[in-house]
Length: 115
Image: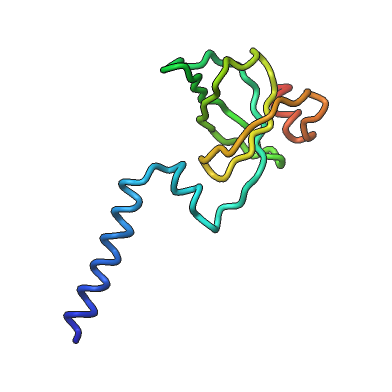
């Protein structure tokens, strides 16, 4: 009986370890029920990497409380230079984005971009 329980525990540990090694961070965040969906604000201040008609961006952004984060996402078009985006994200998983005006940025975020 003890060997059976031990083998089950080992199998569960191997499955969880494999999950974290094989599944990319963005996908883990997408299915993790403990990570909340939130808004991150970024400024498009870098050139994208273009691959097969998609534009890939790696940008520094800020949560509504001013906490810094790095986001990687893609778009089907080249985004306007210096535009501000409100990105809906869950951890590293980007659900969507919309362009916003500088006046619409939260005060904590606006202070970070003004530096």
